[in-house]
Image (cartoon, rainbow, N blue to C red; front, top):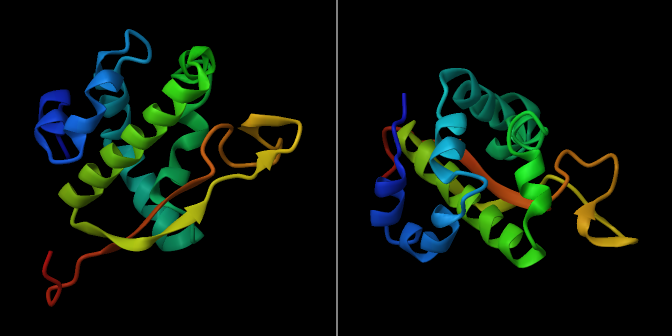
Length: 146
């Protein structure tokens, strides 16, 4: 199981660019990392890629955005903060998937479509309320080198 902490996140090359996101009082970024790293959610992220042809984040994003988890916190962020949070979230998923033996495919997959009446939210039928695209991953094979 992955064990990425905020400290690990901030020590990585790109993670350090999101230091302000990790300082938000809400959502607590360590709580977000803990949420992503449960065995059940890691399995769902892998299953999203393997069985549902969706980005790994697609396996957990609906739950992540529920009010019982981080939905209210995300709704309270201004659009710029939410965009930075979404970028940090994507990078956190990348670190976790890497720890699990997966690599980025170098392409994005859809999680939603912007609502023409609200530039900050996706349409009602979208998988995610706030995120349009997320990185796609594939398992690292023995011949791959990172």
